[in-house]
Length: 122
Picture (cartoon, rainbow, N blue to C red):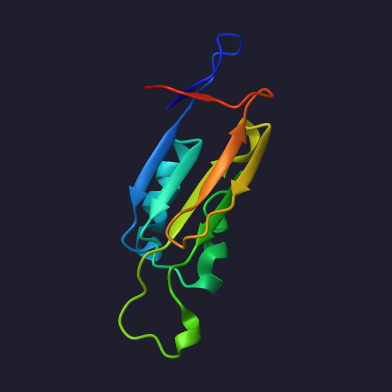
């Protein structure tokens, strides 16, 4: 959780979830995102062209995701693996920017609330 300055005393709710297949967990992810401002997803198992499926969760959310599957190697054998995603509520943050990460296993966003970056509670 993040607690902003005493002036606006806003609490931001964060949830992290290992999907073990976003497609199979989509309904549960939808219910989680209703209770959170930011939802972090691991093991989405989405192919690169399926990342926009994250947007189908909620209309008032934005998303960013990465697939760990390399589709350039031809026919896939077995199930897709890896993949991460972030969903965040549009109306909570003044601004959100994606932080560039070189790994397909890591994604990050920078959020601002009331023109301030949140301080993380220890």
